[in-house]
Length: 618
Image (tube, rainbow, N blue to C red):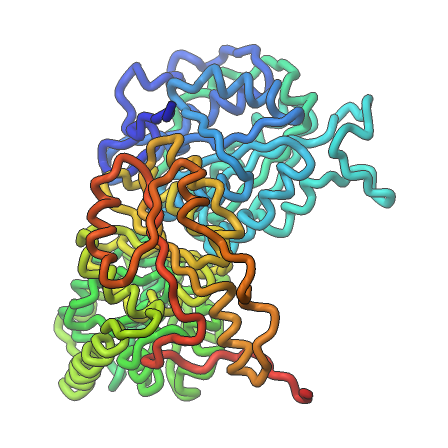
């Protein structure tokens, strides 16, 4: 039997997860002052999570959309029992992989523009260490997630317990210490009363636009079950609002002066534009001033693809119009971007004489590459720039150059995506898929060749329609990420594009999506191995080695997906539109398998990337 969840408890949209008066299960707090509640540490943590509220466009929604849990001896008796008590308010979901469930939680937060998040609880040992890769994904992408791994006994009475790591040099170390370098905040609870201080600190990091990232609270398994008289105020309803820092007036004035003096300015829109919900302000500024806009992987979709000032993707996986503008610009204004090497062409794309300015909520990012820093919220800053530049517009020649290049790029796009007679390339699959999905569909990818082709070639019609995990480029993110995205956006089709290499690394949450009734459309491109690295290997002078599967084993991906409960079929490129229609009409997740050519990638766009080649070879 399929167990279906009520997505209103955790999903996106204005009516998903919305609090509904007294029935929310959240303590009022006004009547709780001075009182105490005796409960276990695990119960306190669960009740506290159920009381955290996010204000999204004036609507109160539970901040935590749910808790992903795989129970073991290190958390089942503590957190497991506590979560069961609050499941009517705070749903618990069971996954098949700790890494996968954390990926789903990360995608949920990304789809919610960081205004909501999820928590993950695991047992000690491999359950906890399986979170490390996902924590690194959240850390690199600046996305909130609360990690609650079980830990060793604080009392040390039964040490060493099952799955305990014994560090001979440091008796305080456990497996959870692996999470320290990939956590924005790490804490270990060795006494139940420590939660009183730890939980507000955790929430402050999760909701801070500059510090946002993974928070780990390691829970000693004996402490989870210990009771304490907690202040009732800990469980009061707490409303968290998006913080929107206003830029310093002097920094803003200096930036305005540089823009007015520029001959050829370019905006590089990063993920911070979307997280600040600044896409409307960006579109208005670009239209009013004529400043062209290029987009990073995280910022793709900040402008719809056919906006007059949209030049498309920038950098190693960028379009020709954006990259040529970046090379010729005398002022580059980064907004909400961390200037990763794929964005800057390994710092070779921008002119050495360019004035670089960075608008960012994080001082760490605003000062990168000796940029002119403007510390502030992307949406607020864009609106202020619009007011300050109301009487100014770029030179007509610079604006016309962008239009001409976009027209040429549209012809290149058509040539790269038109189907042929041979095995299709990734670009040709994109060309066949894009016209047959709804305007508001979300296409999702991570790692390999697909993010590069999609960054260049996918045309976003509605903001939020592109979801790439390319901060950590984590193979295996795709299906689990699709699950989290669909939980956040149940009203939109989620199209997961994944290569066979990533699929084989982590596919178990396909079964989770079927069990939960959360429907995905998975387009699986089988090129026989790691086709992207196969091409890179040869481009750097190497011979093909250890990247493609070869003639064996022959993997029946259709049968495999069906064995996990999904619908699945092998599809030719010409049949893709009809297959997508069947998947849309289906009652569960579908996997559409296409064979593609591992040796072919589109030759349009792109830029040099600094990957070392051997000084000596065979």
